[in-house]
Picture 1 (spheres, rainbow, N blue to C red):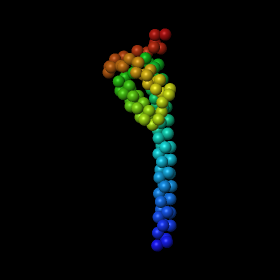
Picture 2 (spheres, rainbow, N blue to C red):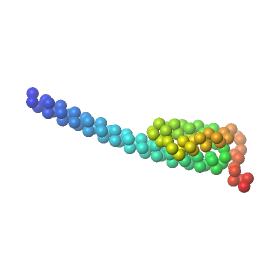
Picture 3 (cartoon, rainbow, N blue to C red):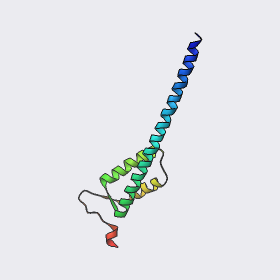
Picture 4 (spheres, rainbow, N blue to C red):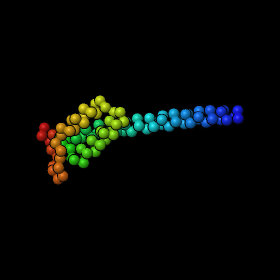
Amino acid sequence: MIALPIVLTSLMGWIVWLLKKQKKDRDANSKGTMLLLRVQLIEYHDKYMMLGDIPSYAYENFMEMYDAYHALGGNGMITKMMHEIEELHLKKKGERTWNRLSTM
């Protein structure tokens, strides 16, 4: 009878430790995912801002990545980049890319 509370206390302590470890792992995975999304969003932004337009598939990818990035807690400069992407001409299938560099 005396051993039961000791065993239960030990078991509860182990469960709490395990849950804390899992939360720490999830937090690290979320942070890593957010950072990878930020890198990809910046690359998309830089590429399509230089081109002056964005294909619809790339626009959709950017917005979905932004939503995931934002849900993970990201904000700030990427939100500004998202607004700039929204202002770009949405290129239709088969339409030629207008390159700002070729007009300079």
